Image 1 (cartoon, helix red, strand yellow):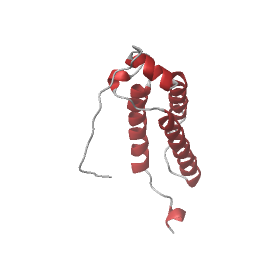
Image 2 (spheres, helix red, strand yellow; image 1 turned 135 degrees about the vertical axis):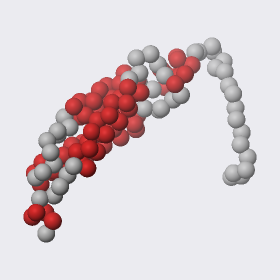
Image 3 (spheres, one colour; image 1 turned 60 degrees about the horizontal axis):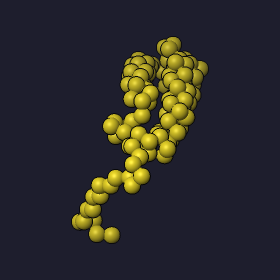
Image 4 (tube, rainbow, N blue to C red; image 1 turned 90 degrees about the vertical axis):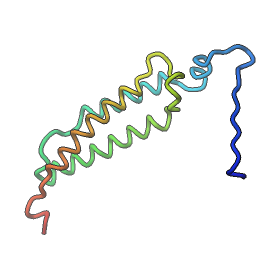
Length: 121
């Protein structure tokens, strides 16, 4: 493969399909939106207590794992097409904004974490 070469093609469908029709036929955005909603449900379950005991820290860690799995599940299916090709009703951009906000709050929780004396030994 010659990495110094680049070929760009611009094509048009021969049967007159619109970009929206091609995108809708290629990916199941109803399913993708459903997975974003499921991820949103995980976000709402974020433990909000201070991470001041090993038990609470363990619950928080499990939530982080669940959140990551739900996010990767949706990203595995979302083609992340350019905005001009996104179908009406796509919720991925809002889901990303919400995830950033919730994970920012989770970061603050982790910054405030102080392990108990027994955990330091």
